Amino acid sequence: MSDGIDLRKMRFLPDSITMPFKRDGLDPLPDLARVRAEAPVTRLTELFGKGIWLVSGYDEARAALADRSSYSHDIRQFVSMEGRSASEQIGGLGMTDPPDHTVLRRYLTPEFTRHRLARLEPAIKAVVDARLDAMAAAGPVVDLVEQFAFPIPFEVICELLGLPVEDRDDFRRLGVARFDLAQGGVGIFGSAAHTREFLIRSVAAQRGNPGEGLIGALLRDHGDDLDDVTLGGLADGVFLGGYETSASMLALGTYLLTENRGAMELLRSDDGAATRVIEEMLRHLTVVQVAFMRFARHDVELGGQHIKAGDVVGISLLGANRDDLLSPGADRFDPTRPPTRHLAFGHGMHRCVGAELARMELVIALRSLAERFPDLEVAAAPDDLDFRKMSAVYGLESLPVHLYGHALVDCGA
Ligand code: HEM
Image 1 (cartoon, protein in one colour):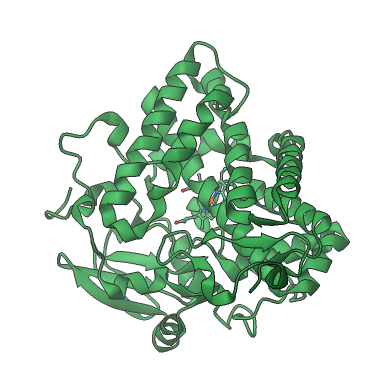
Image 2 (image 1 turned 45 degrees about the horizontal axis):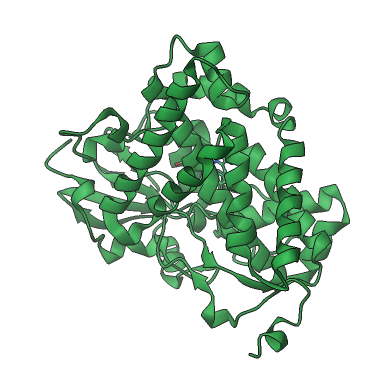
């Protein structure tokens, strides 16, 4: 821990810092565009004697993400570990610096190649079809978040990791609170400890008898080099990266499709068009609103600003992806837009390791949904939709939908 800062003890975060984590429906608050226009690299405030910076321009965000030497990801310097057990040590790939990051990432990368992921495709299709059947049975009005958006990525991650079916309910309960910034540092780190602990136990249980998933594969190939805590932390990083993000994309993506019937049709038409719809959706929604915090290792110039050693740098991926420099009218969702680069999966050495899996999952799930329920409509007035108030991963708490349309009539609204 450095300079007496302990994020675990912070129950409230200052407003200037929380602005990039808030939205109006699917869109960033107008303040984000204003700040980006005034200065794409802005000093928001000071906390515990450190400058807190926001990077919101596309070029500046990409440059910071690509800079391998100027920033540390190691948030552990701001979190007291006194009296904490091994399972409470926070970590995972996203919060680890080279050389450890390089070593750990090398273990994971082979498990996420297209070739290895192809083995998951039938499982993903089966999970999606089962959810669509369950929705049809429960309908015509269902909560899409509960019935579709969360269960699909959850089952996919469990398949990927190779978690036994009988353990999955316990694991599910631990997953949700961890991204909720409304609880300040305490909520985030408290629940993080629980999922890690669960996965460390799961690794220990598989050590004598490795299963078919990623945990088993890593135990078979590198079991002697990876202790239970390290491998549990790695698995937790995969869970952290893959669950809530994909769930949010499915929920917000469905909402976006109901508002853009043309995109819904494009999604059904052919593989190429479906891929383009999903890519534009990733850019427009940018559910990981701000990348992992970066900490300046030394004084660094970025976007004409002087960031001091030790300062904290937040990179607004949403701000960058809505920058008109990237594509004219970037604030609009336009699935016919020419292919556009974006930072929804980050960039550089910490770029999302699960990007191909996420794309595969989104195309299969949303395309199947659009084929099965082409007239699906949201069964609530826009003002009643329950968007997350403030969270690292943006999303919807619930999304009532009518599977066959005419939602408001049937709901008596
Ligand atoms: C649409 C869904 C997803 C989105 C939008 C997304 C977004 C991101 C972003 C923006 C980062 C980089 C953060 C940074 O540089 O600070 C990241 C990293 C990561 N993601 Fe994803 N992700 C998604 C799905 C997944 C999936 C399905 C997995 C695995 C099953 C995954 C695993 C990871 C891991 C392990 C990292 C850390 C990589 C590193 O630090 O080297 N993500 N993700």
